[in-house]
Length: 305
Ligand code: ZN
Image (tube, rainbow, N blue to C red; front, top):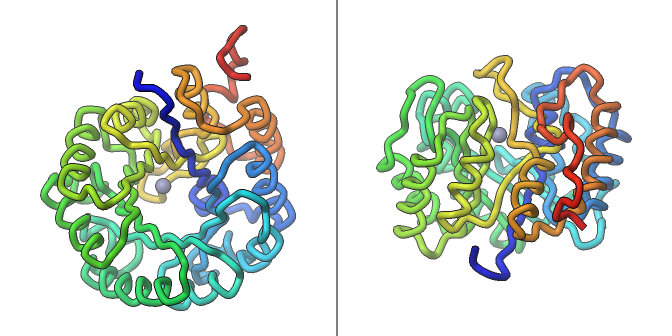
């Protein structure tokens, strides 16, 4: 393994993990969870979305969550923004990095955000102008990069075209999302290699769902192809309304374990993270945690400090 490399784990549990959970998680619990995650050494945490409360009722308290986690030291707190209004609200609440998303698949974008991809790109253009003048970082997530529940396989060309249109707007951080867990390691390798070769100016991250159990092997394939940024959710929570019953995001604790066991630093304190996963179980008694490490103890003499 090449020396002195490390990976950045982006915790998406408070956003992707909670957004589809119908039970409202109390504001204090959200704030407490985000603080604990920061204490575990996670340097980037998605705290929610500045969306209409009718669209995602779970985030109706986003302003308070943002206000009460503002100023956490050494941590970048980020939020999802679907439109200009969300961007302005998020900036007013002190967020310094925002995430816009759209689907490469036309059908998924229409179903998910009721816009064509062209309409999403037009919105992105305005959002980019706004964040640029406010000095705010903007990352773009491309959903269905490895397959779509409506359209099936997404071609490499379609992925490259969406990346190109996004990069042409000046976006330099793009996350390829396996929204419903259709990716496999070989496909991931092909897509990542093509994207990195074509767009060396863009920093790519990966967002895998473990819908059919391939989350970690996909992460490893992406790592081997040069990716160093991974979205994960504590406990493997999160799902997709179009894949009912499926397990959620690749789990943070399993991903941290994977890399640390290989001697690749993540900066995350795994025992503290497992303690936080136990806390999450108390917050969400009705949501099963799907991470392997929420069921198994750490091996004796594990490489974890
Ligand atoms: Zn997701």
